Length: 300
Image (cartoon, rainbow, N blue to C red; front, side):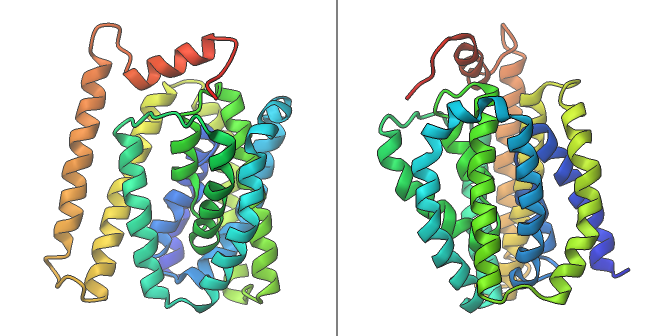
């Protein structure tokens, strides 16, 4: 087994556990690490097929809430179609190293915004849905990552926990299925991708149910926040490495970007736990979520 696969197996297991616990996170944790060893053209087809299975599981276990979530996510699903077509074509034509830079540069601010607890509900949800879905479709088919922007938007919309999971599962099942079909039409499936898929699927089979069991025993918000820190540090390192590889910033100065990311996230993590220790022991984000879950309606 290659060194790349040896390094990737524990990462995919951790990513599957996170996805099982939170309903998302597999690709946003797996891809930044895997890009250190593979190009997107090999990695993406394997991850997309794995995510078809993962997202199908999420929808099935939250099927009681699918009818409620369906109407709210339908505009996003409609926007996915042109986005996936554009992004899939881009994957087949964009230089792999510059594509890595795009992945890390887009992903990092989205992770840090979530870590900062940004909460700004979008009132014109139906109007924004189609262009948002198009953007997510482009991002996902280029990178297989969409969890951070989706979570950032849906967390702001007042969905109850199970409605959030159902909505997220529907969107991600739609984007992964559409992307898998587009990759097939463009001939992007290769033997290396198939071999990589075979290596990561055992982690998915073990990790998803393990994460679902784990989240019942620990505070979900704390678990989510720690996972985001791990994600931010990995993405920051990947961004620094690609900047050095492309000679955008000379090495070792490029790794100063990673240092800045670590410092910013460490401050946000400190602020999170300080808020947890405040009277009541609940962060504003958690208080908002609890209030929403206790109410009969949701924010539009």
